[in-house]
Length: 302
Picture (tube, rainbow, N blue to C red):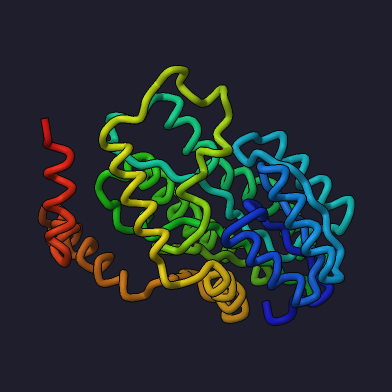
């Protein structure tokens, strides 16, 4: 997709991070912007800002884990603007800790947002976009799903988050291949960011009460995971605005894989070699053994 002016973008997780930055770029490009977020105050602030940029805006509070709410988002989008041209399934939450220490509600929350949120977006918007393509040979559409480098690397002590992001990579690759079977007018990409300063480490602020274990306290591994994530994400040098620009660049180039930190692909190559050799998974801390030693010591302490 080379031209964005006058077209429509649907962005989930639009109240902050990559979503808000993508909305700003979409507005600068002259697009209609549908903003979806679960946090009402963040959504209101984003909507006010994007309206101020002189484009048409539709803000909708949405919990992407709920099928009916994403379906309502699709209907509202279609009624206001018709089929969208850019769908950014971007909403996500973070959760760390040893994988067996996640509660059932931890699994339900993270899978609901990170995986089912993307699945709902694909299920709702793809048919709409394909129908628009059938009616108009000039129509162009692109779906971008936010995964993570954790979807390609499986770092330790990041449990359910890794599982969901691996699934989003798989979903996105399948979507790309399936679309190529039926059309040249709609395509897809997957965004795999590394450590970028966003609000994802504080995503528990929007965790529903019904998906929170009453009286449950974080385990040692979860507290350690939270601290490590806060430090790594907070010290990231690549900005959310830069990542959002990479998304638009990839759409223009019809490029599937979008990486914020290409140097991290060396670790992905090591993982692929582990699989192909085959050999046991390599030490993820081989390049920074002091971090691995600190983590093991902290987890094994009495």
